[in-house]
Image 1 (cartoon, rainbow, N blue to C red):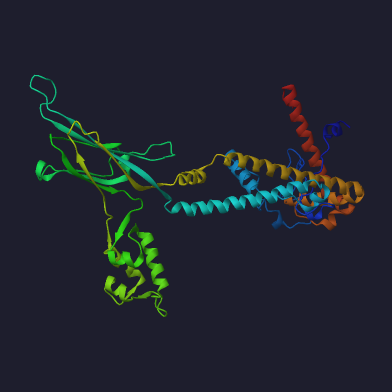
Image 2 (cartoon, rainbow, N blue to C red; image 1 turned 60 degrees about the horizontal axis):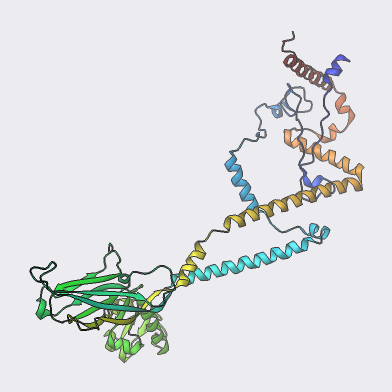
Length: 469
C-alpha cells in the first residue's frame, strides 16, 4: 500500500489525434490543439528506446543509434515573427462554404471582400497607367514675361561724391504669368544661354559681348545685370536660348516642309517620320526592314533605299539647334525718356503640376502600414473562426455518438503516439490480453514502479532539504 501511494500520480489526459483522416466527425486538415502526452515515465527510457525486454523484435531493430524524431529547436523571435507574417500573407481570407451556411450574415463579409478585390484591381491598373504616363514628358505651355529696363547715372563734378564717369545699367528679369505653383521658379532656369550684344563701334570688338551659359554647377538667379560706362543711347540685341527638357531640335527646311514639323523633340520627329513612311507606303512589302525612298526622300537622304536602323544616323545630320529668341532693345540715357522698361511675352514649357501629384501618389506609403495592420487582423479573425469551426465539429461529432467517437479517438491517439515516439510493434498482437501476460510484462511493471519511487524520493529530498539513504 505504501508503494502504491507513492506511485499514485496525476491521470494523463490523452491528446487529440494528429491523423485527421482517422478522427470521426472531423473534416480533413482540421486540428484540435490540446496539451501533449508525456511519452515515458520520469527516470526511465522513453517508449520506443532500444531495450532487450521488448519481445518479438530482432536485435537489428533495437539498435540504439537508429533514427529518431528530432526535438523542436528554439527559433529566434525575429525568425518566428517573419514566418508568422509570411503565413498571414499566404492565408486565404475567404470563409469556407460550411461556415457561410451556418452563419448567413457572413455573406456581407464576402460581398465586402469581393468589392475589395475589385478596388485593388482598379488601383493597380491606375498605378500602371500613371507609371506609363509619367515616363513621358508632361508639360504645358505658359507665358513668360520678360522685363528689360535700364538706369542711367550721370557723371559727378569733382567736388561732389560719387562716380566721375557717366554709366548705365541694364537689367533683364522675368516671371511666369498666372503661376499657380507656390514655389517660384528662378528666371535663369528657363534658359540654356543668354548673350547681350552691344554696339560694336562704341565698345570695341573685345568688349561688346556679354555671355552667360549654363553649367552643371550654375546657381540659378532671378535676373541678369550689365553695367557699362557711357552717356549716349546704345542699341543692343538679346539672344535667349531656351532650355528645353527633353532637348528639341530644328529640322532641315526640306524635311520640315515634308513632315510639317519645325522644331520638336527627337522622339516626336521619329514618330512624324514613321507616320509619313506608313502613310505613303514606303516600307518594302517583302523586306520589312527596308524603306524605299520616294523622290523627296532621295533628295533629303541621298539614297534610293535604306534600313530602318540607318534612319537615326542619317537624321542626325539634318537636326540643328533651335533658333534663339532675339530681342532688339535700345538703352536710353535721356532723363526725360519715360519708356525705360520694355516687356516681352514668350511661350515656355513647364512641368505639368499633375506630374508632381502623380509622383507623390506612386511614392506615397501613408496608408500602407494601416492597411497591413487591418489585413493582419482579418487573417487572425479568419484563423480564429476556422478554429472555432473545428471545435464545433469536434463537439458535435461527440454529441451525436459518444461511444463510437471515443473508441475511434482512442485508436487515433494510439497511432499518433506510436508515430511521435517512433515505436515499432504489431497492433494485432498488442490488442490481445495474452500479449501482456508474457514474462517481460512483469519486469516492465517493476521497472516502472521503481522509476516512480525514485521520482517521489527526489521530490521528498527537495522538499525536506535532506538526502535519504
